[in-house]
Every structure is written in C-alpha cells, then in structure tokens.
Length: 421
Image (cartoon, rainbow, N blue to C red; front, top):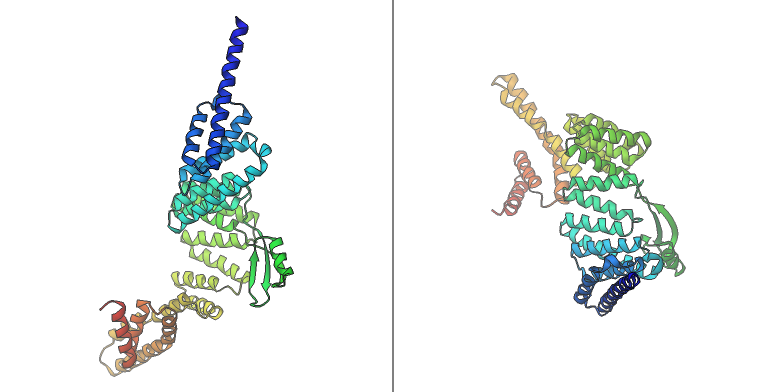
C-alpha cells in the first residue's frame, strides 16, 4: 500500500511537470508567432505550476517570460520591469550557461528597449519614468554602470532625491568614475575629429582611406559631478554637515582632482560661502586658464560679494577668451551702469550755488562718459541676443540720454514690437 502511494505521488508530479512544460512550449510558439497576448496567457497558466518545477524548467519559464514581455512592452514600465526581473531570475537559475546566445540576444534587446524608452521619457520630461527604466537596464547588465549614472541624473530632475541618493551611493560603492576610452580619427576631407563606437570600426575607416590620425582619448571623470550632486542633495535636505564631510573626505583622497574642486566650489556657493567659492575657482583657473566659463563664474561670485572691479576684470577675461559670450558682456554692462545710481543721487543732492553747478556739470559729464563706455557692450549684446527685451530697453534709454534720436526711435519701435504694442 505504501509503495502504491509513492507511485501515485510520482505520477502526479510527472503530470504537473509535463503540464508546465507544455504551457511553456505553447507560450514560446505564440511568442515566435508574435501573438503576445496568447503567450502571456500561457505563461500565467504555467506560473500556477511553477513551484513543483525543477531548476531547468524554471529557468526556461523565466527566459521565455523575459522574451515575451520585452517584445510586447512598448513603453509600458510595468512590462519592462517584469521582463527585467524575469531576465535576472533566468540568470540566477543558470539559463545563461544553457542558452548563452539566446540570453545575450535577450539582454541586448531588453536594454535597447529600456534605454530607448527612457530617452523618450527624458525628452518629454517624464524624468521619474526615465529613471526607473534606466535603473532596470542597469539591473539587466550591471557592468554598464552608465545606466545607473543616468538613472540617478533623471531622479534628480524628477526631484526624487532619496532615489537619486541611493543610486549615487551605489555608484560610489562601485568606484564609479565614468572614465571611458574613446577611439577617434580625423576626417581627411573636412578635418573634423570623429569619435567611433569601437577600435575596429575606427581602424576600418582608416584602412578605407577616409580618416587619418587615429588616436585614443580618455573621457573626463564624472566622479566630481556625482559627489557634487550628492552634496547638493544633502544641502537641499538641510544636512549641510553631511555634505561638508562627504566633500572633505573626497578632496582628501583626491586633492588635485579638478572635477572635485569644482564640486566643492559649487557646494560653497550653494551654502553661501562666496569667498571660499572664489578661492577655489581661482585655483581652478590656474589649472585651466583658457576656460571662459571659470572666469565668468568668478565674475558672478565677486559681483555678489561687492568686489565690483575684480568682477569686471573676470568678465573681461571671459570675453577675451570667448568674444561672443553674451552673458558675460551683459553682466559687464550691468556693472558699468551700477554706478549711475550714485551719480544721480549726488546730482540731485546739489544746491544752486556756483560751486554746485560746476560739480553738477562734472557729474553730468561723468554720466555721459559712462553711457558712451557701456553702449558698445550693449550693442554687441543685442547682436548676440536680438530678442532680449531688457537690452533693447536699456539701449533705448541711453540713446535718449545721449541725444541720439535716430537710434532712440529705432529702439523704441523695436521695443514696441517685442512687447506687442
């Protein structure tokens, strides 16, 4: 009697296992026929019997499930997540060893679907969805840490700071730098330097005779940016001590890392320590003296702490390095015009005496010289930003004060058009 019970039990298990195999095969056939609704239905039927399946059968189930949900997902996050989780489960159960080519193809297809859909979300500013899809892409292929980096960036844009911090911390734990080798060559006809996807692709173009000067370059480290964002999140959450400690430890490990110097400067600026920001930026300027952005930022920070002359020097340096730097040109003009208020107040405070009349004329001339000095900056700014209402308005007012009637009327007409009057 006992033997019969064992045989009956074995038969039951065999029937269940065979039943599950049949459902998986049906799901696979439906998948090959692109009948994804039927495939999902068969997978759900197989799932009810999964507990009794052996490891190979489970691996096959999750592999087919990942393929079906990848193919049918479109931009549906839930289906993509189900595909990602099924893929990970298939790997865990050994499907990679048994079905290496098939798993490789699945991984590529799934990552492509997730990343392409994330790009769509990012472009339409659905940053939380983009972050989730990129994180799932990272989970499918953990060697591609760039997916985790971009997931964190999208979480920041979504203002989901807890998720962003979790991703950034994982990047730090992994020793992420974002440094990659790039394969570049110069187009023989145009002289344009092009980056290729691989060394073999570049070498093929060199052999074809279309490109010359093959080189290998390393991209800049993103570690500083990651640490900067982590410190800014801490500051945003009111945890300034954690922000300072994180940056101090990072700078101690890498005292000459310019990206970290920039991150510390940004943190100092965010925390209101403009002097520290200036000190660090001046040190950075010595390492990168041809970067106009550094001198522009120094101009902004010095202006904010009242160091007007130094700010103007930095703006001039930025413009010297980049002649079409509109923001620097406008800010320089603003600083030049800042002393107008003081001049006008002095003029209004004068009396009717002969000495006051003389002083008035001197101040009036000083004001005129200030206008004449700033007009070329504003005219250049208007060339670069023809639709900037404030530049046009300021020029109009200055032309009026200088008695340049034709230019005044031109700006007045332009301003009316811009304001819809």
